[in-house]
Image (cartoon, rainbow, N blue to C red):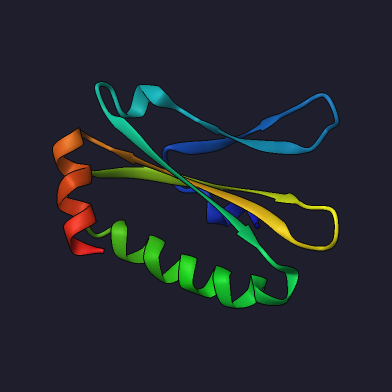
Length: 102
């Protein structure tokens, strides 16, 4: 994923390897909650998966209570990818409302 795929609740932190990894600023969502989803994505489906994920992220950013998100990607052996999405919400009620919309 590119750095511009990480929104306001996350920023890039340097790690020992020199690679910048997403870091979520929990101070931007005091009392908030985080929804984490994980996916195993075959290499052949990555482009289609990323397009669908991008549409979903654009949509949830319009919902009340949304505070930010981040995407983490790790290469699997054999060419696939593990993808984790993290969305920050102002409250459990905001997540419940969002789940009804998505």
